[in-house]
Length: 348
Ligand code: NAI
Ligand code: MG
Image (cartoon, rainbow, N blue to C red; front, side):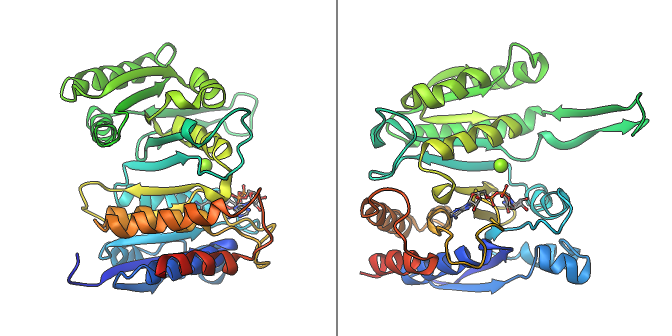
């Protein structure tokens, strides 16, 4: 990777997506990587102009990049679900982003709503399955709009799909100091899917003798995220449980302005995509109020994925140092001022 430029596809998207991505790119360039960004105009504006969400030709082009950086897509003027399903979910499925990686880490200096909780108590990674479960789109509706309407939405879990994400989570756990993996599910009620997940964890665990394993039902895990977040190191869970629990994770670790994520294809058969967890925030778009930190932390994950771990650590440290100086919450800096301050630390 050292010798050639990183080919990066950039999808700024809508609303604050464009604002935060600008700052992410500033930091990426300042950290000394040879990157070659190409911008793609996708999202609500494109949809209104041409009716397109993700043209097949663009999908094919995107395949050729080393990674994708995404801001956020969505606007109140687009019916809900269109951009999520036809753009974001389609990218995840087509590029086999079976790991949705979401760190939940409380940086020193960040306020958490949890009482008596410090940075040492919240440092985990949620490994959310990204291509199956209730997001697979199986099910259907009949007699729609009548009193006899039937709607089913099935959770699809394959042995292959569960095993690969569980293996990824064990590898992650093995690489971390605490070496602990917690399966979060609802095995007592979702007995078919839960059985497959639990058996898979038990079997793969035999290959990782140094990793300790634990299990929590999703409801109990939601409680423990708030009452005892320190019990979690690596959490592995299905698509929907992971979606919900990571919003809770973002809330306890300082809010949506700091939550980063990666949609990862570990086999690298297609580019992985990095994005802040938040959306396009139409309520503050265009005002310079968005916190670009979540995007900058997503850039750190992108660097790490590309094997540039020293650069990734530098970006994360710059964010940590910047955060320590934010006394509590919002400091009144604009989006680009925060980006500039973090960029200065990275280049210094
Ligand atoms: P949102 O995350 O855009 O905003 C929720 C609240 O958090 C708003 O009050 C917003 O101002 C605030 N917020 C979000 N990011 C912030 C940041 N970086 N700095 C400071 N404040 C921030 O979620 P919402 O309002 O539910 O959705 C808005 C649009 O975004 C919708 O169209 C939705 O579909 C889309 N969306 C897109 C996502 C993506 O592209 N991956 C993810 C989530 C939502
Ligand atoms: Mg979500």
